[in-house]
Length: 142
Length: 372
Image (tube, rainbow over all chains, first blue to last red; front, side, top):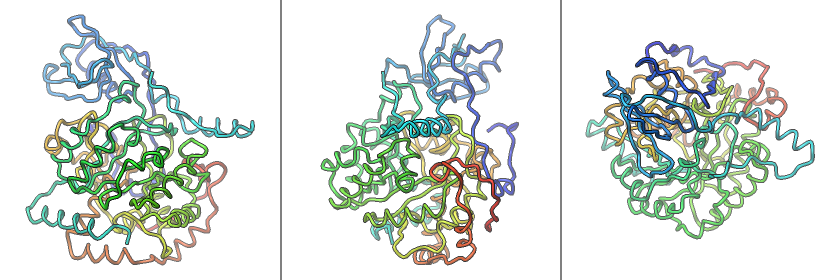
């Protein structure tokens, strides 16, 4: 949590009737502009929240398709790194922030478009049409 | 009493040893997520939305054993994903039993009946079956018609084979407390050892989610549900944690009490938030900025949380770590929590429309606040 994040008082927390929930950012396809260090740190922070793969292009020219699950930040880019899994390797890998030249939120956002309200609407429509065994099924692991 | 004496003894002596050793931060339950793959696709679920290559990954038995051996928790909860989809889940469970860990294998039970012959009943092993309420409510909640019937079939078979079985339910805004109480009657009638329940939490990396119970509403809902208990109801949870949910006790979140371990590592700071991972439990303890989490921190991500992974551990430590807490726990185990105010809450109009079945409701009426 950073200092600029809105803080609740304990009294406010205890009196809370409804929590606002989370607003899901549409990031799929986004290519952030990495003009400076802050841009890179912000983009990698968003990549950490993203439920899809990100393509990293390193300054060496190497391209990595990565699911980023950890950002370890230090004072300088060289002290900071991301940890990720790639589709083709079983082990965790890491790369320094300082090596990253370009990012693209290239993979499908697996958390997008799965609103509770969508299910309620679909269910009611299918029920009205007389369908049986109505269900959502997990996506295929292609 | 839903929790066996041997389990209570193990946990109580563990807590006392830690207290005598002056250890301030220690785990009670390891939340071991061996995989994120699931055979349900519950709308709004915050746990399983990953690319296929992540969903195909799973912890090896050796990685699971290394995690429990490192942290030393006396209990292990195995959520997921659906643990019964892990091809080596029997080996993982048997290895944990060999280590005398009390295991709660959390399952939606779609595969339970089929897989049961592979397991051996043990006092260390409990199947904790996800049931969110009565048939319609549960099916709607897990987005699968017929899910309740399959789960109940699994529960009955497991009970018949001599396994310890509990149910676990999560309640969201719009939950009808009368329906929940009827659900308690139903599940106790199936012969389960006890009930586990929790208020919902707004995973901030999950799909768009709009409305979750705030703390005031959690307390009101759980006061309505848990007061005026029937003698047949048993809860497989700390009585002090249930009093916390009802608004009778205050605890601070101690996420290190129920650390989560998965293919990514040790989750920072807790099972619900994903703010990075540590490579070891020691690193998790030493490098996580704990003061930035929990309701008292003011962190908005923690504002609606009253979930067991943060707040049951302090209740357990309170119960086994002090005479006052212990007597409170004994009293809570046998109390019926008679409360006229809570009875009145049950007579309030039920939530409207589909919300009587589901998580998110337009609760237009304003209910009276419970005490904090």
